Amino acid sequence: MKKIIKNTTLSFLALMLFAFASCDPEVEAHTKDVTITIDVQQVSAGYINVAFSTNKNAFYLMGIHPVREEIDVQKVAKQFMLLALDSAYVDYLYWRNLQLQQLTPFVADFASYALQYGNTNHYFTLLHPATDYWIYAFVVDPTTNKPAGTLFVQTITTQSESLMPMFFEYRVEGKWDYVYPKDTLGEINSYTPWVGETIDSLTLRQQGWESPGDYFLSRFEDVYEGTYSRILYGIYAHENNGVGDGTSTTNFEFGKTYYTGLASLDAPLSFPLDTNAYDIYRFTWMGDSTDLYFTPADCVGGGW
Figure 1: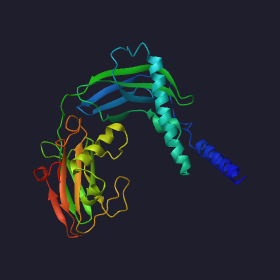
Figure 2: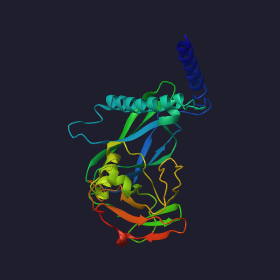
Figure 3: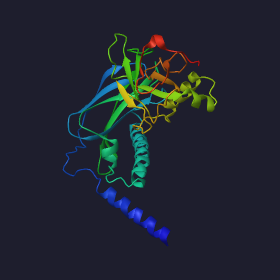
């Protein structure tokens, strides 16, 4: 009986939370005669930057999909839009379930979570080089969560090489470490996604890794499998005190040797990944007085 009451209470709470999280009824949302403009701003090997704009205020779904040569996407526009919405809704339900389990006080509805409203700019990342992609957008009726109107599509081919190769400078100052992603001109690169991780030598050996390079190769490949979520942009600073900031819980300990691996996600520098595709820095932490600065000349390669 207690279990039934508990489940019923949680279900009621979930319904109440969802009820309070609906779209603002005062928001103007057109569903007819809406034109969505897809303006490609930048195309590199591993990412595409796109600006979306509408002639009327409207909710819409935008996305990217590898081109399938055997399909004329406009001839199957209805099916394409429904499949895209289904995929977005499955992602939303997974996210909503997590929020409800955690008793989050506000849980957004589907339109607020998955759809765009008005003009927006978006980076599509983790793309393959020299590959054709459909960039698409279509209006969605927020009251029914169904497509409304035309499928807008633009076909884009990614570059075969990185538009702006990136390297990393790295600093360890006391418990803090700092990552400075830079372009070939030595300026901070704030728009190319990258990944990074720090791990101590003892843990690597205890886990049976043959080398730090093998570890980082395995970890960063997880990005393309969708199981590694620590994707960063621009300068990064983190206090390694074991508390964590949502991306790392490293705790620097006196006398321990650490390896930090850093990789650009703009192919082909990092796709496919190999031990030459990223920077690895090695250091021994000697307490709060530690003050080290590394450049690519200090990289240790993939070995110990």
